[in-house]
Amino acid sequence: MRPGPVLVRLMALVAVASLLVAVTPAAIWPLLATVAALFGLAAAEAMALGRVRFAVEGPASHALFLGAEDTVSLAVRTDARRPVHLVLRQAWPGLLAEPSAWRAGLVRPGEVLRFDFPLRGARRGRARVAPPFLAATFHGFAERIVEGGAVSEVSVVPDLRAVGRLHAQLNRFALRGYGTRLSARLGKGREFDRLREYVRGDEFRDLAWKASARHGKLIVREYRLDRSQDVLLCLDAGHRMAARVAGLSKLDHAVNGAVLLSYGCNRLEDRVGLVSFAASVTRGPRPARGSAHLRRVTQFAAGVAAGYVHSDYLTLASELRRALRHRTLVVVFTALSELDSGPLLRAVRAVSPPHLVLVAVLKDPDLEAAARILPADKPELCRSLVAQELWNVREQTVRDLRRLGALVVESAPQDVGTAAMNAYIEIKRRQLL
Image (cartoon, rainbow, N blue to C red; front, side, top):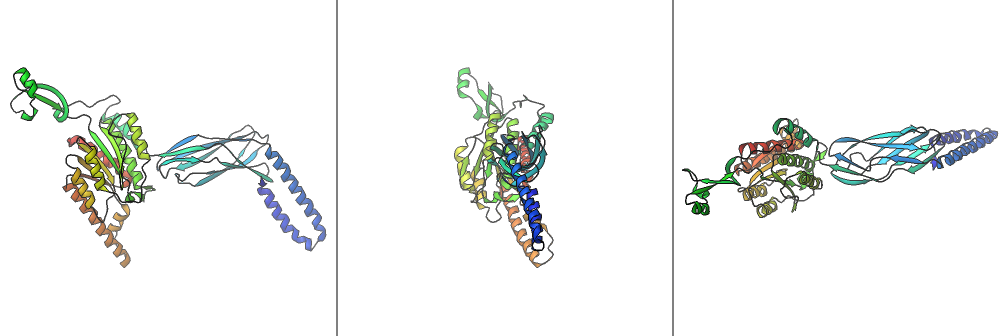
C-alpha cells in the first residue's frame, strides 16, 4: 500500500499553503484539519482496497516468430462493487525487443478489462515471464500494489511464416495437394529397379553375373534415379554470424532460411539433416523425412546460438567426410571472411567430390554500401577504398569456390532462405545431385 496520486498532489498543495502560517498563524488549524481529513480518506480507501481481490488471466505460454510482431492479451477482473482505476506493469524477458510495458484503465463491477501488448521476438529461445504488477485505487488517495496472475512462458521460434507461404504455393502450383509423390525415373541412380536381358550398348559394370549364370544369358541390373536423396544443412555459428542486420543476427536469418529449405526438401521427398559448427561441430538430426523429423530440425535450429569464436571449416569438412556415406548435397549457411578464405576453400576441396556443396553466402549490406559510395571528403575516401578492397577479396573468394565446383548463392541476410530454396530447386531440375 502506498499514497495515491491524488493524495500526493493535495499534500503538495497543503505544503505550499503552510507558508501562510508565518504570516497568519491562525491558518495552521484549517491546514491541520485538511491533513487529518486527507489521511482519514486515505486510510478508509486503503482499508477498502485491502478487501478487493484481483484476477489476471493470460496465456500460460506464448510462441512468437523471430523478428515478427504479435499481440499478447491480459484480462483483469475484480470483485469490487465500484469502479477501480488500474495500472498494469509487465516486465518482459530479454528474448523480446521491449524490456517492459504498462497499461492503464478503469474496470467496472462485473466487467473484464483487457490489455493488449504488442511484442516482437528479438532472439530465439525460451524464457520465464514474471507475473505482472497491478496498482489499484478508487479515488487516488491510496494505491494498492499487488502481484497478479501466474508465471508464464514465452518462446521465440524461427520464422515459420515463409514455410506457410511455401506450403500454399507448393499445393497450388507444384505438387497439387497432399499425397502427391514424385514418379520414379530410370537412370544412373543408387536405387535398384529390376533385372532385364542385356542389349547392345549396356555397360559391363551393370552385368549381374550370378543372374546371368543362372539364366544362361547375359542379365543386367537396371537402376532408377534416387527419389529420396540426402541434404545436409550446416549452420555457421561463428563470430561473423553474430552481427545484426535488419533487427536480427545473421545466424537468425540463416536459421529461418534453413527451416524453410528443410521443409522444401521434405516436400520433394528428400532426406534432410542439420548440423551447426564453429570451433567444433554439433550434430543435429540425421537426414530423414516426415513431419516429426521436421519438428526435431526446427527445435534444433531454434537452439543454435552464435558464439564469439572462430568458424573452423576444416573441422566441418573432416566431420562430413567421416559421417557421410552417400553422395549428399551439403548446404553451408555462412558469412565469408574478408581476410583469409583459405580454410573455406580447402574444406570445399576436401568435401567435393563426392559430395555437392552449396554455399549460401549472407552479404554484408554495410560493407557493400561503403564500397559503392561516392566519397565526399578524404576520410570517406579512405573508408571507401578499404571497403572496396575487402569487397574485392569476397568476390575473389566466390570465384574460387565456383572454380572448385561448389555452387554459390549470395543474397541479403533476410532473403537467404528464398535464395537457397531457388538454388535447391535448380539443382533438382538439372539432376546435379
